[in-house]
Image (cartoon, rainbow, N blue to C red; front, side):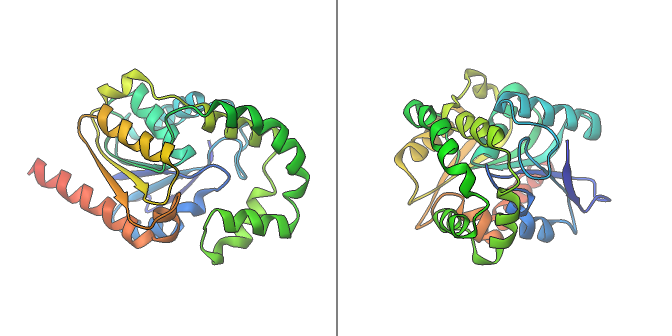
Length: 253
């Protein structure tokens, strides 16, 4: 598994899982803010630019990351965060291993299947895929994602390197993912984030996660769109992480 790591000499580990179609730069500014005191690890999700492993399923990617944590960090880390597809992989990790981390931040994450959307992904991708290497098309996609302008060249370079088969696979997995019953065993103190301007199904998913994870809090972010917080407001996102850590460590004193 390929990762980007900052602050390697620090003891406490923070793992961040980027959104679908993005890459480690989803969290670049957050990682730079945290690296002075924490070991920040950003895995490149399977099937994305920079990964040598095809995307098969959310469940398999979660197992791979859990194995990595087992082998590298003794089976447990301080905090894990995830956005959208990365959030689904994090939810799956928490479902598979209830004590994988002390703290979790789940942002803009769908946990209720959209079967019609999933059925349309393969034909839509087959039709549009030849266009992903066109700058004008990439700019249209980029604007729809509401990503800050300075990241366009990075986004264009990485998105054009994703194979069609991987794109179809992770987009279908994203649309089909269903929350597992074992999430109720999760022991991590969890912050669930969703933008006020996100689709209703994402808000419903956030509410369901809040209901199923006993030690969780739900925050609806005023005026924010999908992934807006971690991508475009990294300072605010970082502050939320630091507050979670501070509150957690205060209870251990």
